[in-house]
Image (cartoon, rainbow, N blue to C red; front, side):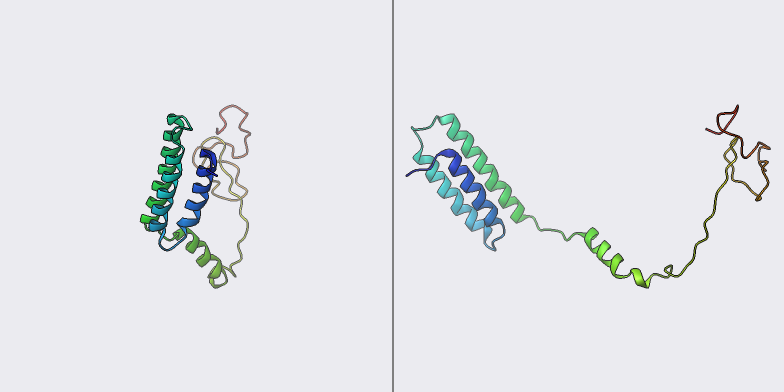
Length: 141
């Protein structure tokens, strides 16, 4: 019993995906295309020509994509190696035993300059009030 167009396309798509991982994928894809062409040829006269042409176009595109994927050399992912290297060497980091003190950066609300001296709340650059709220007139935005 002959398969219909949808069955042919579904089977072709499954077989193309399976062929991509084979060593001789190019030869396998050629055989799949010939088999699909013969099956579609057997449907001539029973199915509208436009539908057959559309099906053939879709099958051809699948085969071409599979062959192009096979022809392109796959580049190894550098990013994956980067993260593997980073996690493997995390214990060797020269910064693993460094203790960091938490610091607060206080900025002038008038000009945005950093506070120069602790507990000095007048800006060394503009003379403005370091803790003035931005809502107040002339505040840093």
